Image (cartoon, rainbow, N blue to C red):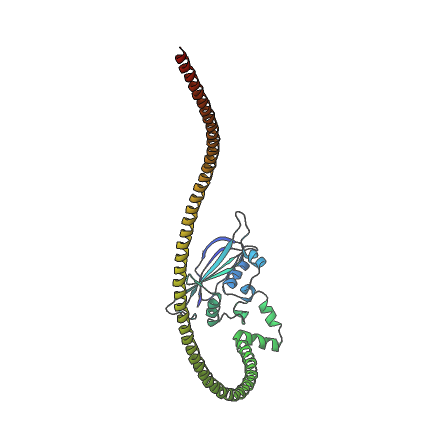
Length: 339
């Protein structure tokens, strides 16, 4: 397994770097003047391989990885590495090449495996399976590590060899396992206590279950009796309600008859009142007429009396005239005789 190709874009001093290839499967050397980007190339490889230096990035560290040259500011950068996997070092089936890409932005990272989006944990598991473990950072030997190795003590070299061989991973796993076993023992003790409590509680619950069974039986009998009593009371109430309804119907019918009789009586009263009012008006008119007639009668009686007096006077005058005429006739006869 070896690197076949590296593609870098907007990563540190690399603006738009074309693919860097081919790489030898044995040894490769990167040469250049100071500031030409040699260290940035190695940082790019460590960036993709999730070395401890680039495993977790803060906001200012992300910003420092973006290219800051002339032109518009870069908002993201990526590094892509193509590995030769002809020896199946990476546990991917039917994959002679493995393509890993990591993209960094201001807020988040994105990972791609075989140019398909993947989770960080998936990439980390793949790299650990191939020997790129974050607990063994010596898959890349940086400048000064060789000199430090030469000046190390035997104990430090042994520790370093364990780290390089990857045995420290198992020591850590062993410690973690022992700690987990201790936690499990504590958990087992707690579980035993809980089981003892549960057994005691089950014994109590069995007694409560028997009491509950008796209570449920008595409660069913009570509810049956209550239902029977309620049913009887309901039937009695329905019968009483039917009787009340019949009585109400009879009362309504009688009340309707009373209303009809009252209406007829009211109409009769109104008719009698109208008749009485008409008779009263006629009586008033008759009284007025009688008053007029009485006045006329009085006037007629007065006129009659007057006429009677005048007739009497006329009769007396006539009688007197007759007597005068008779006297005159007698005088005439006497005169005639005398003549």
